[in-house]
Length: 351
Ligand code: A2P
Image (cartoon, rainbow, N blue to C red; front, top):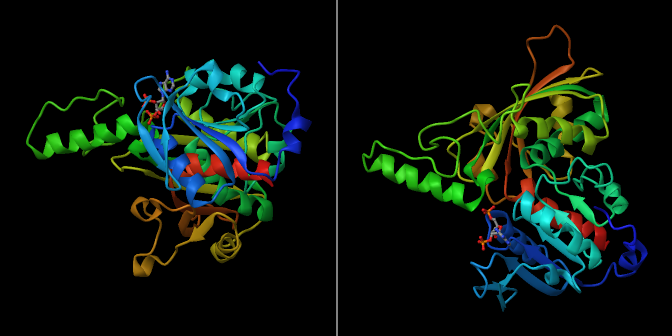
């Protein structure tokens, strides 16, 4: 529920000064990266609150040389907070939304809880930063695969008009949070130790030495929720409601960077050289495309990096025109796919 009394002007007046920030889900895979990203990008901070469940209350974490004690997240936590970066799952975001709004705190939410709500902006700062200012207390951070794809595809869309996109994803364990990453390590160790009964407790299936086309729950049309997030969120972020888009999402035994094979159809002709030229100037993107020398995007190279790596750019040979492009992207799921994008949204608000 949006609070009609939310005072945007009051918030606006605070911009440009160091802010009171909270990280909600501070012990999670994304939360930890949010804290690091705030520190590395030198986000202007007046105070930083680290919030998690009661299980983590009392634990300590360093930020800019200062020890901060993790607190249990309660409805009172957001008083005096300007921006709360949320990554504790949809249920927690829903539970604390009203408390945030009532406290006049802007929630930048990494969960999928509110992304498709009409008056919740869904923002990738390289694409639609202006949407951030239309918020009513909540700004949504996109799905990780969507963010990684969109930052690479949008510059091509701007130049040549995107008509259709077919995506196949290769998604890392980090998309399932810290417990999924630990499960991949534990399962891998168990397989290497010769164990045969490999259990999947967090993820849908065993991931070690395996992959599976099942991320999030199946929907009546046979797609998974994850696949439909890519479809619906891309249309919203790029403001192309009629974009033809389909996706197959696959979990692969990679620790933390997602990759995607993208088949793109444009309104206008586009050559691989043109695509490379456009992408080489695009914000948040780095072209690594020299296959002869074994240079192409890989999750190990994207890990820990802010930029999305794009390569294997080639003309789609299934067509008899020059409107199709094939390319491969890798991006850090926890950074551009989550924490970095959230901090970038906070930076937009603080401009
Ligand atoms: P905690 O570590 O105390 O459980 P991940 O996505 O990596 O699994 O991380 C989830 C994050 O959400 C963690 O920081 C976790 O804190 C936090 N979290 C989970 N449940 C709650 C809750 N009931 N209240 C506040 N934070 C929660």
